[in-house]
Image (tube, rainbow, N blue to C red; front, top):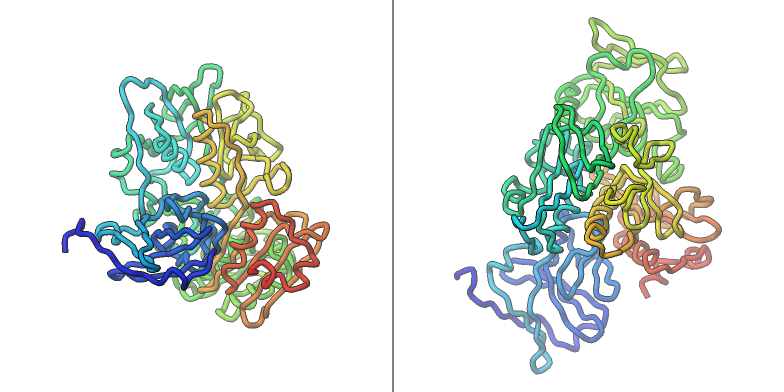
Length: 529
């Protein structure tokens, strides 16, 4: 059969599906999502373009389906991606209803492509403007792609201090031995095909907004018409004596991940910090290192974000795989031998053997190169932006981990959120407003962590929560946690309870206030009704 040969197939009877229902069908081995919404049938690919999750297990809200795993959203009429993570849209199929039967018409080529790249324009010589993008993370890449999708035909230059094209940074702590090229979000040809220049190993050292110029460490300059700053964050450095010894690492790049993975094999590893990066690295190394020890200031890992009970569960899970925890303490000093770290002495006097130390005590925005510029930053160095991702200087935008922005679900309360999903969303909004679309950022934070095959999903903004209501059974690794402030749900986390986190994200996005009373009266049944 040729790729363009037509395929038609009856899927079901019209009367078999209720309004608001989704079903998966297999056609020639490809998974298709059939949706009945407002009495109309539509069909798109069933695999989320991010990591391939089955969208039929997600949550349908009107004409959009939200992925059960990581919260990406797609329009079920067009297949277009409307919320992140992920870059691509879904294939869309023609659906007809004849004599009470629902039919789909497509071809093998369309079926075999689980992802659809939106159409993009190219650079034209007549457009002499330049958009400069400092950084090469998801905010930078989505901004560049959105500009081309929306018809911007000027020059686009993305600049990164790293030697790599944009890659999936979330995997650095989850698959530390992966090759950098296997993490790339787009192949090299993609950038030339769409006239997106990527300058690697090029570090910005200053921005002169009066002259609209970026200066680089090698002495060269880049003139811009509009600028996006998407430099992300960097690991906070350890301050204790001995922190500059060899084999003291931070996780920022594929090279860092490879080095830690290689040096840790069969050795004693000490991880400073018990939040998401530290815990994921501990889980990854648990069956590879001779010993893994985690040091944390809090009573349990994840305490500030996920709470005591989930933190205790995560700690027990890793302890069962041999990971040691030293909580409510910190390192006093790192001792070395011949310039290389040998052990870590804790505040309580305990000495841990250490061939490898990983610093995971938080991050800070990468904005040191803006010192002396007119671009306003807060006390932590995060760039102030408005709801359109505009900085304090005209034609200068910022997006991703590097910004302090007004969070719509918190009625404009400023937040600095280092989530993979949010960075994508910021990049899109920045691009649209570079083109004067006047579209505000309106996205519910969504993140996930994976420990030894167990995933915890989280949506919302739980900072300042005063109460946590648990549902399910923690001991069975199946739970829901609702985070409340003033008796209103502001965030939710779960394990093995899909697609509830996606459902709550949609509810929060719609402006709906979920009350404590609703949660106590079995919220799962309520939201599913």
